[in-house]
Length: 109
Length: 115
Image 1 (tube, one colour):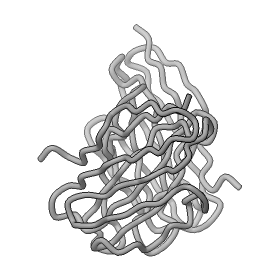
Image 2 (tube, chains in turn green, brown):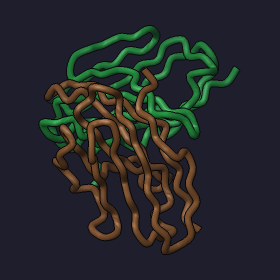
Image 3 (cartoon, helix red, strand yellow):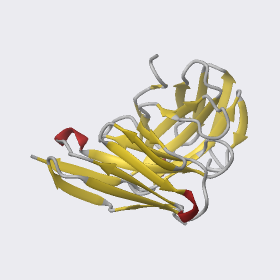
Image 4 (tube, one colour):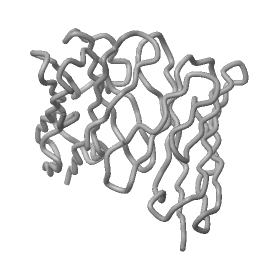
């Protein structure tokens, strides 16, 4: 069973458009982390957001724990934002993360 | 801070050979994790150490895979008798492990190819 579902699987935007990425969990969690990965690159932590809304630059994450979902909003997208965005949740009381399949974002000029 | 360091970056082994992957966590981090990433399965948790002690290996294949953490500065993942289906990127991660709500940092991974 896939415990973390992400949508959409892929997304193509024009530069400067906004993106909304969704993540849902099959069980309750108390930790949600969003990551970014370029092909062949390192997993980079973007936002750590166990609940509520957090912002970092052009990124805003909103997590509603009781509804078992989280979203990542990217405003004014740039070509360099292209890559895969992964949502992860912590399943137990330590930091083991379970990942979704990711959203592949392509930003075109 | 060089982050989590993994070596080698790429490894090619013949079917049936042994592969050992190395990880150096961020200094001071007490939690070390191993994950595997493939196109088909995505990111899968393998095993977790806290203060060098194995805590959870529920994601490890029961045969051929083993992980150790002999000291706080490195961990190894060993795969015996490698098979083509073991081909993947193996990722190591570490965190301060302060309980809940602790950020996890990943290395660049080791790409293992079994031919």
